[in-house]
Image 1 (cartoon, one colour):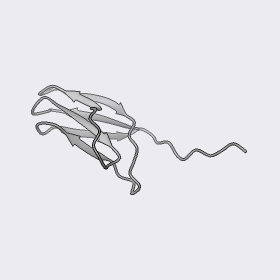
Image 2 (cartoon, rainbow, N blue to C red; image 1 turned 90 degrees about the horizontal axis):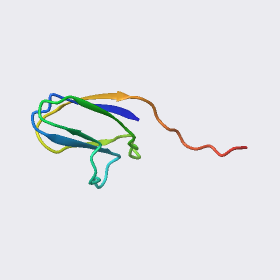
Image 3 (cartoon, one colour; image 1 turned 180 degrees about the vertical axis):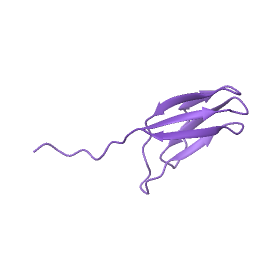
Length: 77
């Protein structure tokens, strides 16, 4: 879980967060020019422990706050 904030977007844009590979066609966050907006994003990590970010337009400042994570499911005994 990552709280993602777009700050001071230079153009109206959207941001997508995903583990890597083929980029999904859905946005996790939308911002108008000059707007600051945040959203809690649930994004998996790649096998190497990384995530990918795609910004559609302009040059926003991004603020990322790791809010938590989900570990592997352990079967009940």
